[in-house]
Image (cartoon, rainbow, N blue to C red; front, side, top):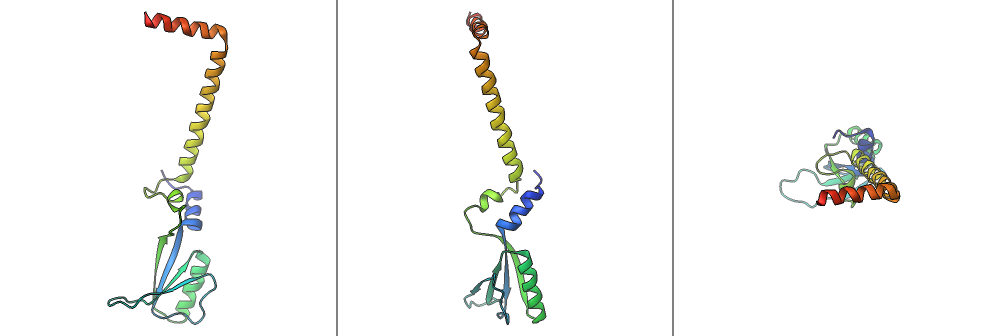
Length: 138
């Protein structure tokens, strides 16, 4: 199913994070950044990794990197938290419609159970059902 606005907001807020790779650290790193210095390996172009979770922080950080004339690249990836598979399943299905479907299913089962209980509670209906079963058995 198509993703709803709620699904997109949940993914943006709780699932996605932006990795920004740079050659050198910026002059003033922002406060809401997780920083890692990458190990020196042959063929690796970037030496520093900055992980940001807010789009506003990402925009500000990129503007600062551009102002400092730094070379950088960005990647948007899923976080490594336990709840990520529940909010953003691998098959890109809508979590909102899955929850709505389960709620409708549960309410339908409760309604059918309630109707069945009330039909079975009536002695005349119960006698008719038992007679029908006796006729089917032969």
